Amino acid sequence: MPDFTKTILITGGAGFIGSHVVRLFIRKYPHYRIVNLDALTYAGNLENLKDVEQEPGYHFEKADITNEEELNSLFARYTFDAIIHLAAESHVDRSIMDPLAFVKTNVLGTANLLNVARKHWKNDMNKKRFYHVSTDEVYGSLGEEGFFTESTPYDPRSPYSASKASSDHFVMAYYHTYHMPVVMSNCSNNYGSHHFPEKLIPLMINNIKNGRPLPVYGKGENVRDWLWVEDHARAIDVIFHEGKNGEKYNVGGFNEWKNIDIVHLLCDIMDKKLGREKGESARLIHYVTDRPGHDLRYAIDATKLNKELGWKPSLQFEEGLEKTVDWYLGNQEWVNHVTSGDYQHYYQDQYAIR
Ligand code: NAD
Ligand code: DAU
Image (cartoon, helix red, strand yellow):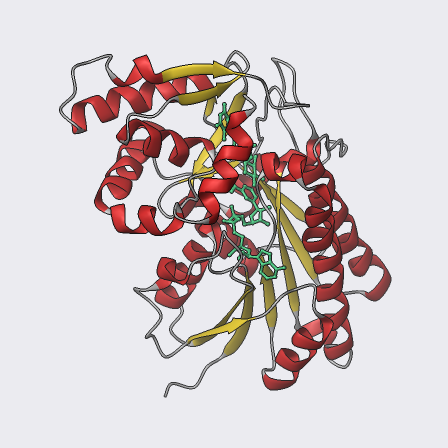
């Protein structure tokens, strides 16, 4: 058994981004003990970590961040040097259906985690680090011009983004009030493998494959700034190790796309891969009722992270999208598992009205 130099608690490690962060840390830092805390909600899936679960530094703990007793018992069993906090309810459409679930996990859960950490770390707080992973959605919606910087005022407009904004404020409150060494990042839309097929890109890939309608909200003109999930994991690595306490860092792909253009690009890629005639998949596109309060445009200015910590995205979008499609086509069993059961009910409720 190696001597571990650090024990890091990663919350939400069984989810989309969390599993990429766990994988990166386990592979790059074999001398760290990584404790993956996850409640295994519909979005958490231990299959995402099959390739690293046997590594000596990897531990899994099923627990809920809203449960104080469960967290206390974990903090008593492990001496955590740091926390990377990703656990959250993450889907905007679900937040519109059930806002209080987002208040519970994202606001109360984060406050609970901060508070338990504060109590257990009180004697050596300055040696610790609490890294909070947040989103660009806290900044609200842009018009056709401009970018979100770290000093853009918060203006959340969905229950999801309001809950994330609130959690960000709690993190900064613990920095100022209790001198907890915190660092935070606000990232744009991620894409890549292991992305739950309720989100735009994996949902479209799955529906194209199965010849099902492709539900484009409104006119499809909303813009998102897409980042390869492994580039986000690399950003989290660099910010975790080199970011300054009390600071936040924007992370983004410098890669803005209208939704409808992404859907067309996916249709073209998949026509080729599935041996369909060009244009066949695009005939599945359906414009449906818009998402209420749909933010028009997100665009991140990630200059600070680039200038201060040297990070930049590594992959071109077209190449990343093709790799993503390949992953989904090659992992049909994973897709079948995550789209059985609860997913069917969610899909019916979300799209029947549209
Ligand atoms: P995800 O929904 O794929 O995964 C969330 C994980 O958290 C799941 O494994 C789930 O089981 C776990 N979880 C949920 N509630 C929990 C609870 N009460 N206790 C313990 N675990 C719980 O989310 P994601 O897309 O990987 O996002 C991870 C983080 O990154 C979130 O905080 C999200 O706000 C943020 N983020 C996401 C994106 C994106 O494009 N997906 C972009 C920027 C920031
Ligand atoms: O910007 C970062 C955020 O990106 C993260 O904080 C969130 O956790 C993550 O879910 C994502 O939020 P979005 O709402 O931008 O992602 P989503 O994939 O749900 O939608 C992307 C765009 O596509 C958005 O404009 C809505 C549209 N859309 C989405 C779905 C699911 C459709 O047109 N049709 C769909 O079926």
